[in-house]
Image 1 (cartoon, one colour):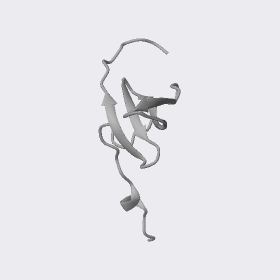
Image 2: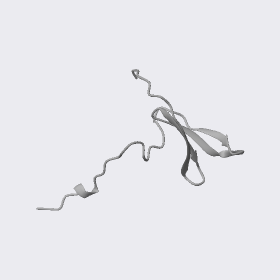
Image 3: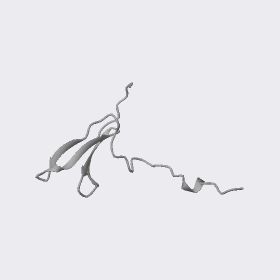
Image 4: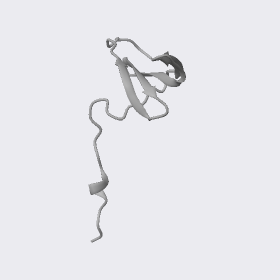
Length: 70
């Protein structure tokens, strides 16, 4: 019997690692007086602001879930 690769499985939790929603656009925003460094991306019902130089999320703008159809 061979070894299985089940130990490589993982389960994502909450919004960790979510970069952006597939149907949304990425937009450069001015933040802290700097332009061309920060981007705002939609992620589920929220908007995340990312620092492109550091690769870190710097701000979360909370939204409300909306019911609807695609």
